[in-house]
Image (cartoon, rainbow, N blue to C red):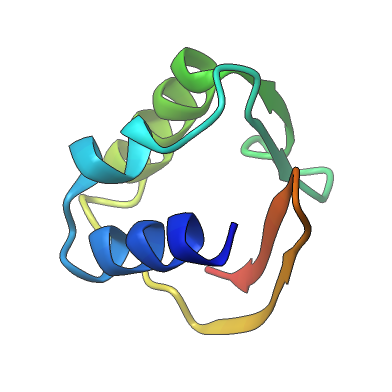
Length: 84
């Protein structure tokens, strides 16, 4: 898992979305907490990417990662806790 996550992290740093998304499970879940219009749970690659596209457009083409809180990995799962 750490090798896969390292590849994902490098793709993310390189802004290589194709490489990053290729490493996602088809049933990826993206959870955005809160009660605002961007909040929700987005299941699957297509839903995640559509949500990201919508947020990116609404924010004028910028999404800034403020901090990465933690990486949680096991043999079957990887979770990244970030503030954007």
